[in-house]
Image (cartoon, rainbow, N blue to C red; front, side, top):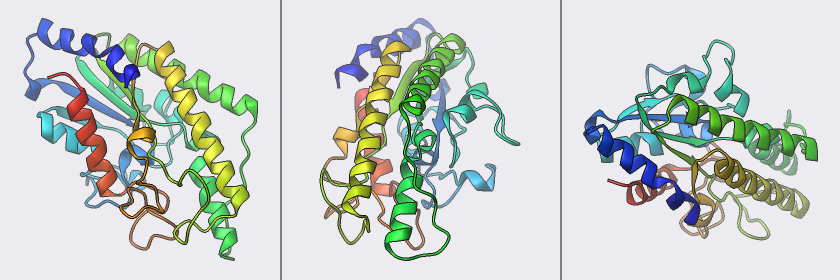
Length: 266
């Protein structure tokens, strides 16, 4: 919580200095599927189909609560590179950020290290399915590259929007602290490997935010007890008919929006 409180005064001061109403404040939401919300319909009809950008993801819910002018450019499958540079037919997500932006949220990094893809592959193999994604084991160089990219991202957003509040929204807990369950068909080794990736991603996110004058919403802490094996999960298990396996459900998106609403200054 200390991390997210450290720079919030900047957001409040900017809003006061420019005498902007909440309804006029420009809010840019960036990130991968954990920001976009695949499986949580309905989707934005104007967004590319492959992005699966939900109209009920945490950004849309927060914007509705605060009366913010939302520009949501999150897209399923995105890596940090897609935020910094064009990705196929999509422009760099950071291009949506300008000097008028007063708030930026982003959830990113998991695809850079094969976090959720690795879970897909491991569960696919455990169930004897065909065409499983390959096992992924990030190297120290991969983690270093992720940290560099996330730090660059925070600094680039700050340069474009010096008066904006920048919040890295962490990934919610996917797995329980130990073991697995019927909803998470994984070997002990696969589950432990996923937890190790999640921990490294959390540490890198916090380090990059600090280096880039950004803040962090500690969703990894907020979501404890709501993993895919919990009685009241915020995370889908595997498989997830009609939803996205190993991705946040609507309850998770609502909880994140509520946490942001409570934490950000008025």
